[in-house]
Image (cartoon, rainbow, N blue to C red; front, top):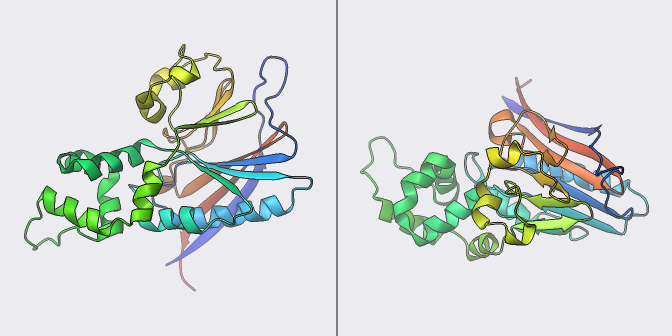
Length: 267
C-alpha cells in the first residue's frame, strides 16, 4: 500500500456581520489550520499547499499561519508534527500556535503521573509511543505509571516542552477571533475562562450569540467545515477522516485548502 495525497482549494460563503462581510486587511492573508492530531503526512502536504497558495497572492505584505491546537494524541506521529511546527515552516510566514485541550493534558501529565489513564483514554497513548516508544509488548512485564512518566519526561525534548508551555489561548485579526474550542456566550472575551477556551462544546456550538467577531475554532470534528452566523468550525477529524483543513482569509474573501490522504494499492 502507498499513500496518495490530494489537496483542494474551494470557495464558500460566510454570513455577514450585520450588513457587511467580515474582513481583515487586504494585504494580509491568514491561514488557519484545524486539529492535526499526529497526522504529520497531512500537515506536511497542507503546508506545501499553503506555500504554493501564498506565492500566487499579489500585493500581500503579511502572511500568517494560525494553528488552532491539538497537534498531538490519537494520530501516530505527534513528535514529528511538533518538529514540523518548530522547524519546518518557512520564515516568510508569521506563525501563531494556539493551545488545545490535548496539549493541556500533556502539560498536566508532565507535572502529575496520576493522570496517565485519563490522558490515555483521550489518545495520549499514541503520543507516549511517538515520543518514547514505551508501550509494553504483550508478554513484557507491566510498566507502572511512574515508570511511563519518567520515560516520557526523559524523551520529551526541552524545545518541545517549551513549545507546549508557550502556546497562546486566542488570537484576533480584523473581524475574526481564533480559539481552540470556542467561547462562552454572554461573557466578554477578556473574561473568558481558560477551561471554556480549551474544552467548551454544546453551549458554544448551539449558541446564536453575537461574539463581536466571527469565531474560527477546532476541537469538535465534523466531516466538512461548519459555517454558522457567528462561527466557523474547521476541525475535520484528521486522525479518523484523513482530511486536514485550512481556512484562508484575506480582505473579504474566504476559501479553504484541504489535504486528504487515500490509501491505494501499490503498482
